[in-house]
Amino acid sequence: MARDQGIKRIEEKIKQLPPELRKDVEEFVEGLLENPERKARKQLQFKWRRALRDLRDKYTSVDLQHKISEWWGD
Image (cartoon, rainbow, N blue to C red; front, side, top):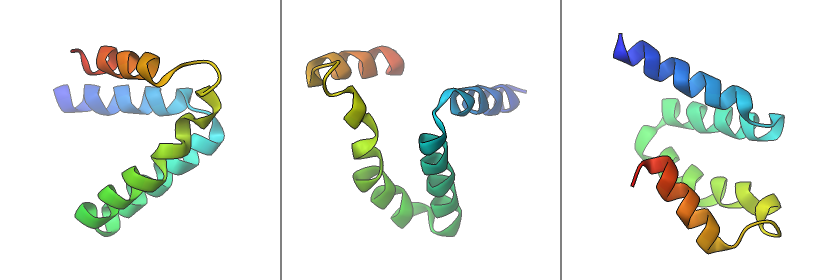
């Protein structure tokens, strides 16, 4: 039951992403299915790093760090 709720939460978050980021998520998941350990590290290091590029004029890196902490529940 809790697992189903977790999947639904993930699906809802993905639906909120713009199309280009949804494509990144799809590629990331496909990579995990092919080779979970190797692909996860590679995708996180290179693909997601540029995902916040459009926010650089709106937020400082410190602002983003605080937001990430909020998301993680720290």
